Image (cartoon, rainbow, N blue to C red; front, side, top):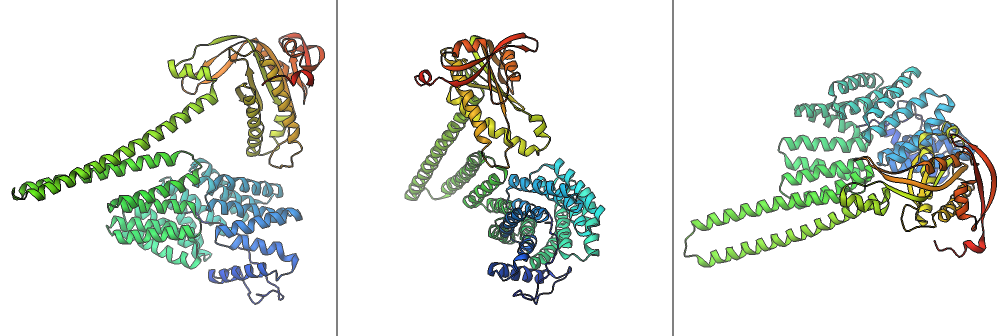
Length: 626
């Protein structure tokens, strides 16, 4: 269970505020703090404050509200207002708190995006405390994403910085969260070491919430060691403290652990009660991770009690929430299939056992009760028919799912290979290399890509490349052109890899113009998340050899001098231009306006004739059927 960081700043009210009588100091009790935030929220909603205090009030609400949905709401407002006033510190707080709220709601990808924004601001401001806090917040996200290596790395960086600046409370929080990460990865010795160190600090600075977290997580360790009484005492004490503090995420997780403890004691009723409380609390505050775990616990409880219908219902809910956290698309179908099979299998076993009992009892009865025996036989036949009916329905559902997965696999294969090649691979299990006498090959490259990559985050750079290449994929698909591969910022495709195509050079040139236009149009979009580039394009036509390399992670590729020359056309082109060889020029000259560049020196090739394709001849190109 992660300890959620706050800044513990208290906003001083002025006399003209509606709640000016609240005089809060750093060690204010949690109930007073809740009263403070409730009152502050009322003041904000009524607008009963001096306008110059608006940002400070929104920051206080972002820092101190418990409900992640409300934190998300106010941190978004804080970001919006801070951007207008160009306030880097308020912007840092807004990004940090929004990232933490998104983590609690299970949206890890978006959480990391905002936390890295906060980190950039803190680094720019050279504020080691802020850098330390955001490092631990990032580590919390990686921890919940099961990326242990990244989580430990960011925790250690954050802890070192917070220790250097003397932020005792958040230093202890970081130690605790690192201990929790070791606990998740079953390294109990390191977990206990960090919990004990954090617990001493929490006790010294009088932080009851911190002590509660230590108690609860030590209870989890005791439960894993089979010390159920110690575990129960610790977790109950932790829940008692956390209830006063209304820290719902932690309470929900610890309630699930209490359910486990009572299940081990065969107290099914108490175990069920704790699980339902955990689910109700997690649902009320939209805590996806806790909702998922509570549903799984309830599924296990009902399975042990023999109520397979309820067990299946909760297991499906568990899978749905697990999918929404992990962002996986096909697990739900597999889970339904597997669970349906397990429940059907168990139900069939129960039916057969019941049938055996009935038959044994029938043999012991008086043979004269023929009518009763006949009635029981008819009942069993009906039960068997019903079972066969259910089994048939199950088989039909299974076939449908298998068919869907087969179609999905075929679709993925066609995304990698040309259709003819994919069919050959499916039929024979291998692909023979083929020679094509006339293929048009295109290369693109972004100008100053390496320089740009040094000035933006890796996440933003990858997002930008994906933005451009996704559109390039759509364009070449429109013209029936095969994508070969992309390496870094270089995009490679080829036309004419079908034996029945002859107009591949024309189609490739038309596609090139659409690519150039898309890149130019993108420059007009005011989107800070996308890096704007200029693009160079090179095209050549000639013979190639095409085939598949590899046996597991196979790849479709083309080879030959034609490919090398096309690459040289791109490297000798200019930004915003389409540079072609004489071979391609002879095929398209009647359809496009081209400008002869003369003979240009090419690496390892000597001098070669080159042309820029400047525009389309409307009178002829309009008659083409693409």
